Image (cartoon, rainbow over the protein chains, first blue to last red):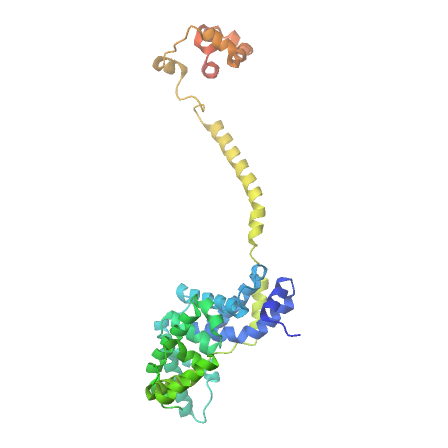
Length: 192
Length: 178
């Protein structure tokens, strides 16, 4: 019978280490994706995502299923990533070289390969503009977009992570998407 | 024409998170309002554009790295463990304080209750012996301690000072200095 994430976490709390393997397998990629979009450095994102799972394992004894597991997990991920940003464990947002990231082989590999080199360059440039637009948002709006658009969490999961009400979250998301709509209007009208 | 769309309902509309009644109301408005229709179309296009930003995937060694870090970094003690350790810490602290006080007393050049020599103190603080002093002294245990001390009883110079019977501690100190 399928178990909820909260039930898996309670099994881990009871000493079943296989429950940790299950949660790791299910949320490994989402956590890496989320942290990567915040810190933008693949190696650091991987290290920080590992730190998130370490914290999950070590907090198992104190875990209480008061909220959804995803809320708890992404709150940990948010704290870990933001702390890394603020501690200077990476280049600051504005100082990060986008060219360097574009040259990263993982990113290049994951960018949907076009039929030609010119097509790939065009896609890389569009991705750069999208990334820059999201990163230009205030921190809370940026987190809201990452959790809503890219992690596909629902409002009830995101609001506690950002410590706001669901109605405030909806307004926050509107303002974030409105800003992105203006900034990315040229891209929306010119699909590759 | 009905009111324009509220900001808090645009994203839920695109997410299909509105109730049927709300959705129908917005649909009716969008059918009549080209401005809101254009805005909604742009939001929908934006969500499509955002899909183009891809993230990195975890490395194949991700799980092994997590396991290794769990093994390499000792798990911090739970909070209750610190509570369990506190009595031991308290006992250690008491012993430490006792040792420190003992060492201080052994190495201190001036006795704890003595700030000057007995003659000096006698000059500064002349002793006034009340008439009822003998009764008071005999009523207290201090005088008995003096009488029980054979060394003190043999020290006639000391006994010549009557007041020592009322200040046994000072008398002892004076005896030490003599």
